[in-house]
Length: 453
Image (cartoon, rainbow, N blue to C red; front, side):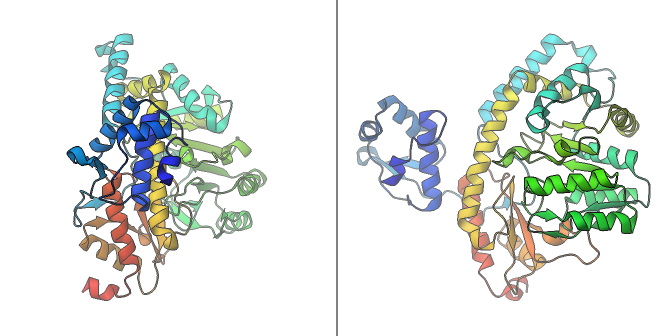
């Protein structure tokens, strides 16, 4: 019974450690549906803990649908509840919400605190673009783990990272300018560049990410002054650029006086918590962090640490021209959650759930993963004769939505060798497991034409 031996190995409340261990071993197949569990009293004795703790763990496991009680016979691992054809959306990166009650409580307390320290008329009028003093103070606390000492004069608060990226391109580039980036890139940047008339130029990479020599070459060849990086748990490839390569890329920025946008929404999801490129070249990088991919898309708040106070003033001015201001109550609520510690608690919950989902994807899809699962997604390569579009169509027939590699291509001839699988939107791990098993079955199918036809 190795799952019992490992039940207390992790951190957190003991009853949740037991539940998480049961769930993890169910996902790996060590505990199968119908497996009988020890009695609560026997388990408490074996673990050396109170019976009430085990009872609480079993209650939570039943609530999650992991186990079922059969009267005097005891408790058994429950069969999966997700039907084979149940739709699962794996096409959008969203943080998982493991505890809806905790989120509800945090939002309720946060909203009450905002209204207590302000008043409704103040929250319903115009506010300065770029964030209030309170917002900037809250942003400093959020960014210090990534950047160390943060200068509030160089900070701008925006209503979401997409607004921030838009304002950065408008303020730092002109129509027709080249923007250097990876071959596979965040789709929001593709749409933004197309709308603004900026040329995306893909820079060659290797196993560690964008190559410094190719960045230097592309900047000279195309006269580019701006680079876009997504260096941690890259969207879509899940690659994290190692520290040495980050330092080398920063030196290229400094030597050739380039500016960079470092879009880093998944920094918390990488266990190594690498120093951002901005830490190596602070005078050349606009560092963008958002609550949307860390906690919830509903907290539509992003923070930009700029190369200088002058850059911050320019960015705030362009944001004002684009959207006049952020939504005052939403920004005040985000700041309150950051300042009272609620945001950190929600972040830890989301990260813990994301890690479990990543382990599940690693276990079920390891032969097809280009890199270890990172952030909120996995990147799967297609075995021949699959193409990304054929696979996406086949997945759709199985009630699964996935994102083909052509969706992320920054080159004229799109790549067709992979799909991104987002792991956070499935309502629970049981449904995610069912979806990933269907993905695995499709990846082993050698007749995609038959499924398309």
